[in-house]
Length: 192
Image 1 (cartoon, rainbow, N blue to C red):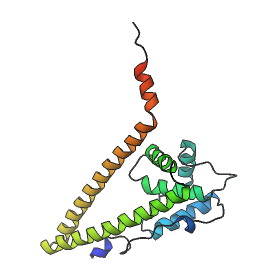
Image 2: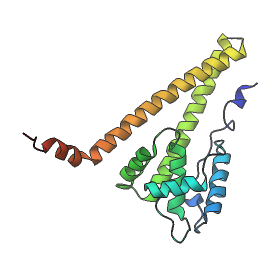
Image 3: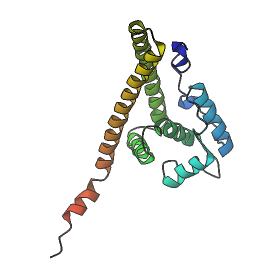
Image 4: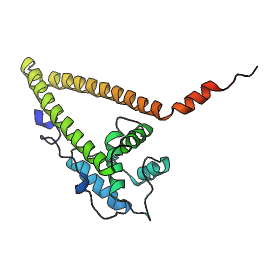
């Protein structure tokens, strides 16, 4: 097994931009096909990446705007892409809070393009760093199984750290969005 087999695609992926999304509204099956195509190009393909029932649940939960006459617009696609990218790390309520917080100061297009650029930057930087780490481990250890296992431990540690930081950041957003509720609960008079 070669190093390139563990790095998705061998080169940093290019995430879609707002202008890459179709200008026409799509039906559910078209949305699923398009999103699958995007994730396959990014090396993130998973059979359970997105299903019709997931989309319906996102709408019911208020994480995704309702379709108009069963059709999904560019805004829907942008939201779905963001949800799919973040759902591996954050709960849906957290994703919803992040999207709402960002949309207070940005348009849908700005948010989507910012996220795509951020992901590209992070993937590029991490691929370079992990490639160098892999080379360093391989130079110190002749047993490839040992190199792969140590590499996996380190990548998992970074992933866990990033998840913890993300959850704490989302908690801070949630707390800022609900200060009145917490104050009201504290100010209720006690029964004597």
